[in-house]
Every structure is written in C-alpha cells, then in structure tokens.
Image 1 (cartoon, helix red, strand yellow):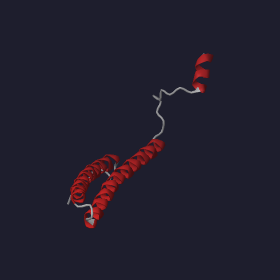
Image 2 (spheres, one colour; image 1 turned 90 degrees about the vertical axis):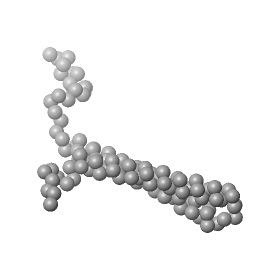
Image 3 (cartoon, helix red, strand yellow; image 1 turned 120 degrees about the vertical axis):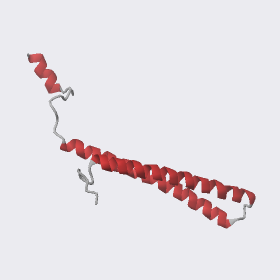
Image 4 (cartoon, helix red, strand yellow; image 1 turned 60 degrees about the vertical axis):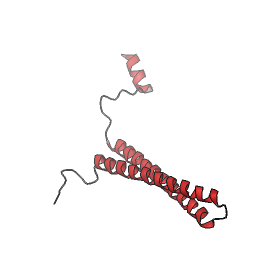
Amino acid sequence: MYIPKQSYFSSTRVQKLAKEVIKDAQQDRARALEAFDYFKKMVEANPDDAKSKAEMNKALQLSQDSNDKVVRILDMMLKMTQAEMKTIPATQTDTSITFESLRNNGKK
C-alpha cells in the first residue's frame, strides 16, 4: 500500500490533479464539438430532423459544461493561492514600498 510522504492535499498534488482534470475537460470539449459538427451536418442535410437538432444542443451543452469545469478549477486554484498567501508571514526581503518606509528613509 502506498503511503505518501506528504499530505494528500499538498499544493503540488492539488495542482497536479487540477492539471489532469483540465486536460480531461479539454478532451471532453473537443469530443463534444466533434459531435456538434456531426449533428450539424445531419441537420443541414435534413432541416426537419428534430432528433439531430436535440443532439446538437446536447453536444453544445456538454462543450459548455466542460469549459465551465475548467473555470471552476482555476477559480479554486486562485482561492487556494490567496489563502496560502494570507497564512505565509511576510519576509524581511519584501521589497514593497510604502509611504511609511519612504518617510523613514528620508529621516536617516
């Protein structure tokens, strides 16, 4: 049995899983668009084909759902990064300039 040396939900593991899910979602989107094109050709050949029109709409919905999945993953990754940034204390090598630091440098 595999026992990881780090947490199951370490940031690198979560990033790796997110990358795999995004890759799968891109493949799903490509397949859905292929299905859409297939049914679109069927509708162009026979405009009265209600079944093909319904399948064309389903394919578009699947395509949009896979795109939404990627957006949700990216949103979660941004929130995770923001949470990590809040918990990490500021280092002494912080090079940001504030009005207070400018006032203190002028008094020396």
